Length: 357
Image (cartoon, rainbow, N blue to C red; front, side, top):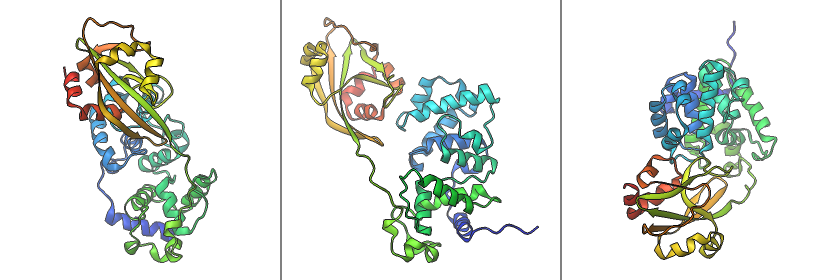
């Protein structure tokens, strides 16, 4: 039987990948659990940042059964600092579903994988191809950029029609004989070679690349302006008394759901905060500002925060706000918390000493 020919684009990418592929642990296996874990960690995350978490989580939970049996607090504690905590919740939810409903085995097709919590088109295609050899193309920002430049595609990648158009093209290009290698190659090529600031001089595709030929590298892909970031201002109050601190777990459908924090009010003005929470007024005599306003940037939000430390004498009493509780200061270290608070603790020696007991 005559072997199906690869598209020259695919052939060139796979040849390039053979010489430039980074040695990463999830590329040494076809274990769906390990591949799924790596893909969830790497959503919105650079490899250099995600790699330590991959090792930490796979060591703590070597099988999907271990992860399913874990409590959420332990998982959040290990995930701490990686951000996008909804990924951790979906990780736990999926592990439980796979164990309880699928006998511990992940679905082996894109059509089934796409229905798992936290698994979108890109992640489903990655798992289907890397673990099961299905010819499902991965399509993310890297792939948009490479295909738009190489083929001269002018569709706005933020337009609703873009994913369908680019996925159809990628489907034509992916070789059925080696879909995993093609997907790894195009992802690696976008990360190392055809990056936002590409190395066109050493690009093996440059002679047939439309953007290079027409000097349009900086114009492709077309991307309309994203919506402006929402700016929010948080006032934190670390209220400590007799070796305990006042905390609560964020429950609302907002950022950092399920993580723990000190007493927090969303406001730009300390006067407004006191008007909203009068119990703070007499406590302000014991307040020490811990930091100038700090900025923490999320994907669609910018958080500007200020923090106040209140070490209260034992004789002061007040009614604690609803949903808050006292815990031993040393226990806060064991709870999952936003990276904003991690940085606050790290940068303030006095606060760190209090929380270490």
